[in-house]
Amino acid sequence: MDDSVTFLSFSGAGRQQLTGFSIEGPVCLAYFASTFDRAWGALQTLDEYVARQSR
Image (cartoon, rainbow, N blue to C red; front, top):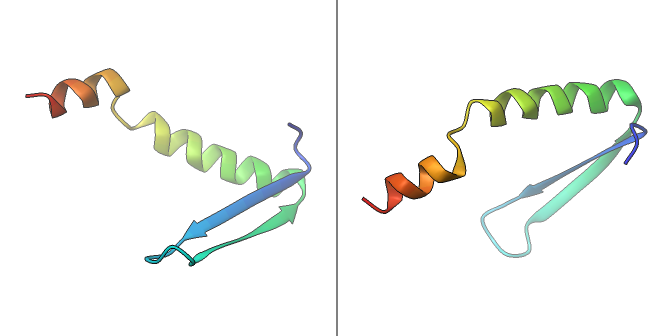
């Protein structure tokens, strides 16, 4: 992977409502990568999630 293109896709309520687009440029990629890294970093680990679900 490189930092030339960002691909975003969005899912709607129905099976056929998947849309998306791409944006060229490393600045956009850096913004989205940073946003998702922060969001995922705040989530609980998979082990924690599984343990909570099996209670």
